[in-house]
Length: 124
Image (cartoon, rainbow, N blue to C red; front, side, top):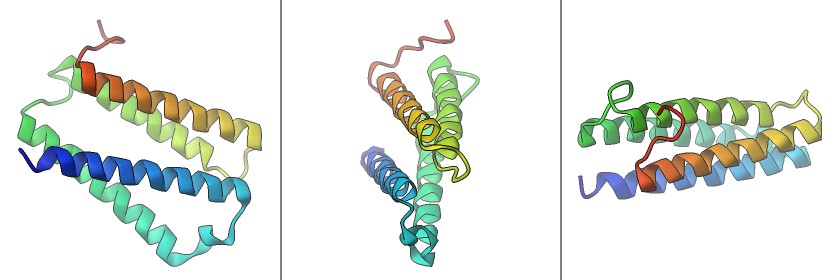
């Protein structure tokens, strides 16, 4: 358990940093978005992050749909995933993508407050 939490936090920070870079490249319409190494590294980092989330659930003994905080984290993670998908869409206009980006950052802060305080706000 001592090594799992720092690894979990490191992969989350790396995933969020990669999302910021990806969003900046999308807004700038950079040719680096088509680079094979960038695409593969994004997928690998996101997969490792999902595996670390599952590992933390197994090690801590908390599971979604049993614990309300974990259920809210799961719902919030799905909301973040949807917002990330919408912010990286090339067919949408810039204002819509920026609103989706801000929404994903807001949901990210909500998940952070759930992790720090451990109190469910939406499913009371």
